[in-house]
Image (cartoon, rainbow, N blue to C red; front, side, top):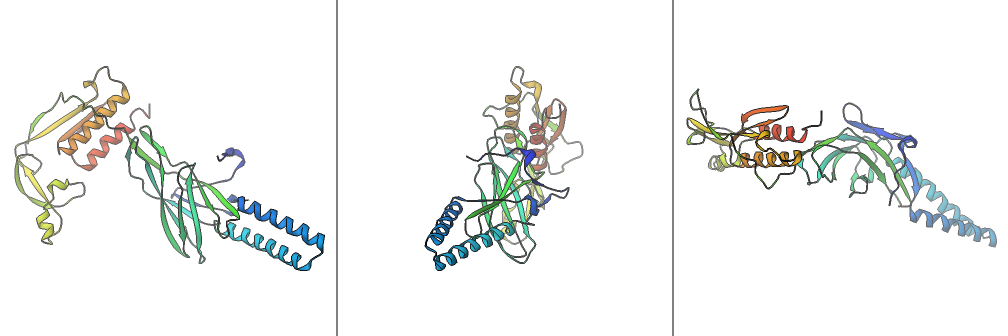
Length: 315
């Protein structure tokens, strides 16, 4: 079990406004591993035996191994110094799913940096070998149990290179967060305000009734509407449009569930959002402090789920 030292007595590398953090020389700690302790005890025994028997060859071996340990200490320290970390993207998840954080590592020197390890608390670590003048990306995961904004937390950057006798590590704190949506409930919210809205401006390809044509693909379009035959004929990604004079629209209303606890309401509304997106149905969101007009697509889905995730956080 690792003991976390108090914040006031340790040195931590913090990210700058551009999301970059650099490990400085004074931010690196080094201690021997269990093999390093055994190695030191072996050197002590060799030294005692050399003095006792006045054996020059034993003295030579003792000081040779001691010099090897000193050189290993320098290389272990140099493996971390001036290593640069940059914040990457973090996709939103639902409560209960692991949140993944991407960190980019940049080696700005010519020499390689083998066996670089990143870890959060006692969670599984990620390891990489950085060649000279190279970059690599590692993903760290944190468990989620509730909705909201989940910070990355303190990252421990460590290395046992080159001999495993010593462990060098440094603490890095970066301004990285992951948005956690509410956990979808198995119960759907009541659809008390479902209905049809007529289009006053004519057929614009947003209805649900008839096929009206094809347009270029836009990010967020449903895979169900992609014109796969056109893609197979190497005409690029295209999306089918459906029209008509009416389209389903649904309001997901906070006040439609009286007597239900707050978190349970959010979970039910989350289920309603996902079901509406699966049916490609226009829906709006009405919760205290937030009202989003009916729409569809991945951007609208994210706005609604983000509103649920942040609900009550500013109160």
